[in-house]
Length: 280
Length: 293
Image (cartoon, rainbow over all chains, first blue to last red; front, top):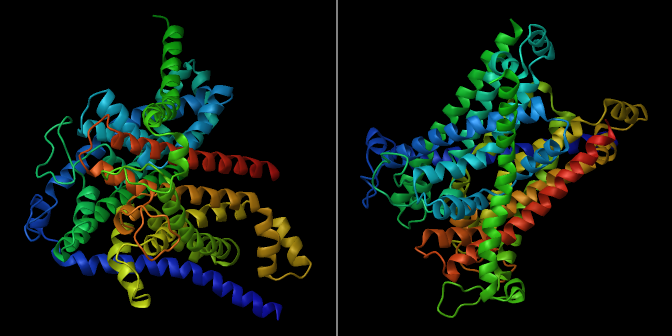
């Protein structure tokens, strides 16, 4: 009897897991069957249009690339510097403990709240308007906790003997960090950055809140340009009642997912190379 | 400049970057508090928190936030009914039963599930799950709380399962061996030894999941409708706090008007709710870590 209950329980648990995986399969199947036929070279190179057949994602794809590149440029130096401080300098001080607690809480603040911060701070107070810069600054704040936490992990994997060896040769603390610790931690830092950016590229709500437009028929031409991004374009198409636009939304999602998965693939390759080097 | 001065300057600069996170929290609170204060000068706080009608965008303006709060709770509860038991069962399977090869394949797939942008889940809820449910419940409206709730549960499931699994794997092997030695089966060990031992870690995961559900935006903005309604009926269109913020952001609401300020007041309420839950979750995890340190 106990044995039977055990086997039944094992299958129920496995069943819960399989339902989740089946739902993922249904999601992929639904997307491909709805949007697969809309995917074409024209879809990638055309801009938004009132006519579903002619509409494409070029402007939104370019917007996403601009915003993400700038987000990375803002979040990487600030995040790495913060992580170095917490890991190498202040890890025992009370301020550092408080900052740590604050960072882990920030990581769980809903993204739409960051959108309200961006709207109040960047768009209005700093008068950046609804620009690529305002969007990237908002997403950089959103990505910072993740970049900081993954950089700290990477710094922790650098053996202490490396630091001690460097000190023994007369290097200062900063020389040790800059010349020895950071280069060794770099692949881990980059992996964390790419994963943080792959999350940011799918973010919709904070950019809608700062006022990134849902209909904008041109690609950005600079950091002060107005913009839209792929997920917002998808949202715009989903919200329309006509089924042709739903097909466009599915195709737009497929483009977004390909972008996301390739970023994840790059992160995995970087991590693997690091591990191979670690073993050598 | 001496090396020592340079080192000092660098350390200060690094500290400033670390302090940026404090400024972010401060900035969030300042922006929300400022606009909320302006809002509350026109709407009494009691009317805001206990009013049962929310019509800021109509000519007859009413600012009772309860319909949005109830809508949020309704969708989040449906999500939790899916995510908590299924996430916990998945975690038990992965931690206590699964062969390691299976685990190595399934964990990255669950990570993909967690990394799918929420706008994609919104599309899935509106165009796949809702029509499917309408075949079972013909009275189900095209926009409703049920479908986004179920899909949100699916989205949160990997979070619950991965955090719970971490908590269960941190339970010392000796406890399991002791249980087996007394003749317990794997199910008895899992449910009566491992889960109770990992209880605070699992609870922390659950609370974080609730917080994530409350703050989730795009699924409900796409599939739940835009009708703030004080109801527990999952078959009719409703509106959540997050979906309302999106709705106003999409329109052309001028800065400084009361309509514009409503999104900050609603945002403040959302921030307070999620921040409280997050702090509680962190506190629970910290306590748990000490138990087996």
